[in-house]
Image (cartoon, rainbow, N blue to C red):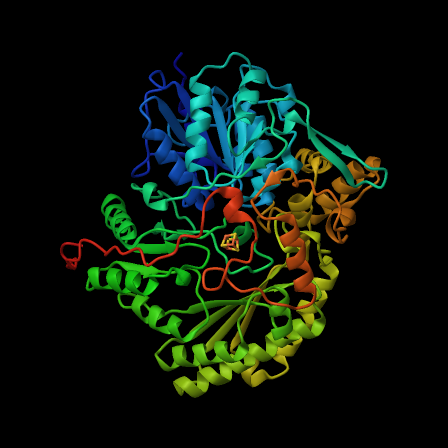
Length: 640
Ligand code: SF4
């Protein structure tokens, strides 16, 4: 049955809202397929604003992959800002996709990709505006299946009441398998959910019961249906070259956070930074070949007209053939207006050659490094092996070669951290300015330090850690600012950007929370919570009040979920969700962290048995791939 576009009702509202262009769709490489010819219809939602959601690679990959299937249709949806939400309520316009402006409730599946837990309230807005019951238990055969994905899906328990299923790990094969389940028909909602539970990597929360102990801790999470597995193992795409997506990158109509085409040059990371959930849950390392990258860049630039190529991964300079990739691409696009960028960089001498290669066609604006911890000791705790001397050597070389600005990323509130660890950030920044002035012979070099509050995440060695309270973090950052400014001559060239500790604490509640936290999310949303990842919309007070009211009946509170250190034998809300990491290895790594002992990277040293390779039936895949960048003909300015 055909579905009407909501655009005629939406269009008159658009002149009354900010940035209306974000709601109209029709971007280059977007797709609107025939509704009636599709057997399975997906709405892919990114629960944040268009400007953040459109460049999201995960959504772009799945959108293209699904639309390539002849009998499948996929459209995108983003969160609407509160100004449009109010008008949609007033004029009874339901949640819609930006492609066909079809109502969300008409789709078979709504796939929601959560990069951060602070998007949970936006999911509730979308469901409510769509007329879909917030709670999965209240949905009928007529309603879409709501599936969560993305990194936050590795602990979907706080949203267990609102989603029908969650996908763990890489989505490429999982979405095709889910599509196949729906192609087989929908005998009943309950049967579809059971079939989904039998699909690798798919977790159906309603098929599991959680019991609690009198002290508030979880006693057990057990399947309540014989067709639900005891543990759900994440999906792992083994050969990235077989999945060269996106081939046709979407080109935004409105301004977005990134306006470039991105190629994921490898997935996974084994550096072992203990705070990094992305690094832990995406293991093992799987590199895309040189030839594969070259083809994707060429095809993507041709299809999109972008002039910047981002070489993405968790630590792009670690690709075993990064020198060949950057030199090859810089040669190929020499003299054109195409520039390369490498969002995450490594601190060593090689980096400067790489940076020079990357800036061949572009500006030398700034170099970014992430020491993450201020002192050598805390960097051993977090396993980020960067020595201050190496950093100073690297920035000196950069300033000597014409770079003028260095950005340094840090975290505050790390396990075992003291004021002194944080204050060392000031002396590091001062040394950077001194070294920069000496190397460049100029006074106007700059160092910007950017500091975020640390949030302990599931499936990391810090999952047992106590999170620092906002007062401690804010106090340390005040002392740090004073220390930076204690030497005016150096301090005036140091910029400091930081987030206060309150949003981090709420992110901590949502990251390590269990099903009881769902009531807090719903209360916050009912009290007006929207866009919690945005400082201007976030209200700490709203979360604190909702947590105190909704958690009290269970005998737990905000601090219980955040600042409390966990026991080794404690059942974590996500223990039945298998990221491949061996729990004993994680615990040992936590003990190593407390003793400030480092762990090497298994790419360059023997396997240290984190458990991922045997659990996921794969292995680390690093080059050299034995392939070449083709075609090797340089693109001329007129041809490029
Ligand atoms: S199992 Fe071994 S080789 Fe594989 S990611 Fe873990 S430590 Fe590395």
